[in-house]
Length: 144
Image 1 (cartoon, helix red, strand yellow):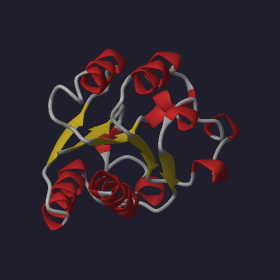
Image 2: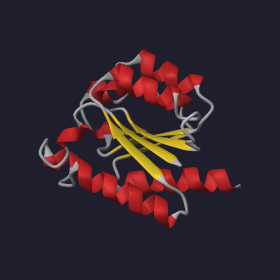
Image 3: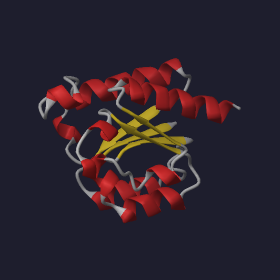
Image 4: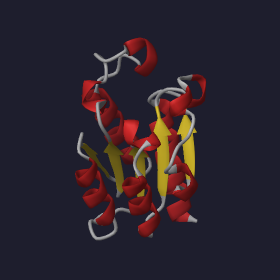
């Protein structure tokens, strides 16, 4: 099972700055992730929270819940949360960081990810397709 975690403000997908984040809603994104998991012969569980501690709890429980990988879009916590970074570093399940927008092409404060160094990889700027790529990577890593 692949766990898909979305952080703060991602519940507003499709409404919040659609020129930056696209027009897909969170429901659209989750449906795509479920379909992608099925294509890959696995399952997905999708969760979203605006609360840092909830995301940390889900990361801590990933292996126990049966996840073989995590797709994580930490939202704004990417650039600010040492606690989220430490949670990713503390678990044995591989995590792929995903961002809908190209964070390097945005405001200066978005250029640095605190979680990137402890993730298996990062995918930025490819919109919702980035989630599919992350899921494919995790599924193929599990199979090899």
